[in-house]
Amino acid sequence: MSTPPSPPGAERTDGSSVQIGALVPLTRPGWVEAGQHLLAGLELAVREVNDAGGIVGRPLELVVRDTAADPQRAAAAVEELARLGVAALAGEYHSVVARAAAAKADALGLPFLCSSAVLDALTEQPTEWVARLSPPQSRGWQVYADFLLSAGHSRIAVAAQPSVYWASGARILRDYLAPRGGTVIELDMRALAPTAVCDELVDSRATALLLLVGHPEPAVSIVKSVRRDQRLAEIMIGAPAGQPEFAEWATLLGNDSAAIPFLRYLPERLSPLGTRVETALRERLGEAPSFVAFEGYDTVAVLADVLRSYGADRARTAQSWPRVAVEGTRGQIQFSRTPGISVWQWASTPIQVVDRDPADPDRFRILHAS
Image (cartoon, rainbow, N blue to C red):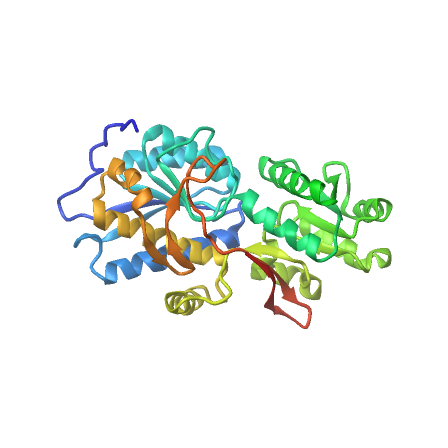
C-alpha cells in the first residue's frame, strides 16, 4: 500500500483531541432523519469513549460535515477534513455520496469507515483505505429476493428512478430472480405519474411492487395511489432500501405505512451492549432508534479501538482493518476481503426483512432473516 505523507497535525502528541471527520446528510435533499440517527449513534459513542478516558488520555472529537446527499459536496468535505488533520473518516448514509467520499479518501490516503452505504462498488478499484460496516447491496437485496420468492411472488414490478443505486438494486433482483423463475418488470418513474403506476401494475399482472424511488416523494404518493386502487387490493408493496424504518414514514402515511417489507440490519435479539445502547439512543433521539443509529455507534466503537491500539497515524489505521475484532451492538465486528467487493467488509452483518404491523404501525414484525 502506498502511503501518502501525513499532513501536519495528523499525529498529535500535545494532548489535544483526536479528531474523526463525520459525513452525515443533515439537510434536504438528503435523508435528514437517517442523518440524524446516524449522527446520534456517532455522538453517543464518542461521549462514551471520552467518559472512559478517551484515546490514551486524549479526548475523541467529531468534526461533522453535512453532505446533503451531494457527492461533490462530500468530496469537498473529505478534502477539507484531510487538511484539518482528522485521523479518519466515518459515516455517510447515501451510497452515491459515500462512493464519492470513498474515492476521495482513497486518493488522499485517509482511512474511511463507511457506516451505512451499501453500493457494492464503493470504489472503482480495490483499496486498503476504506472499510464498511453495512452489508453490500448484493447480499442484502438477495436476501430480500429470497423473501419475495418464499412469499409466493415471482412477477415483481419495480418503480424506479434513475440512479446508480436504484439501477444496481434492480439488476441484483433481476439476476437473482431470473434463474429461479422470477420476472422483474421495470416501471420508469421519469415517465409515469404515481396514479399511472396503478394501470401499469394491472396490465403487468405483477403481485408485488417495489419502491426504488426517493423518499418522501414519489414513494409516499405511489403508496397512496396503489392503496386506494381497488384493483390492487392484493398487491404487496415493498421497499428494500428501508424507507419505512423511520418515523416520518408512519407520520406521512398513517395506516398505509404498514405491511411494506424492507431491509434493516439488526439481529433478532440485541446483545447486552446493544440493549444498553438502544436505551441511551432512545433517550437521545426521543424515539426508537433505527438500525442506522446502531451503525453510527459501531463505527466509532471500531475506530476508537483502532486508534487506541495503533495510534492516530493514518497509514497504521488503514493497515489495521484485517486485525479488527470489536464487540459491536449487533455482533462481533471483523473485516475481510469479500469477492467482488473493493473495500474491507464486515461480512456477517445481520440482515432482516421486516414491516410495520398493520395492527400497530409503531411495531415491527420480522418476516425473514439471514
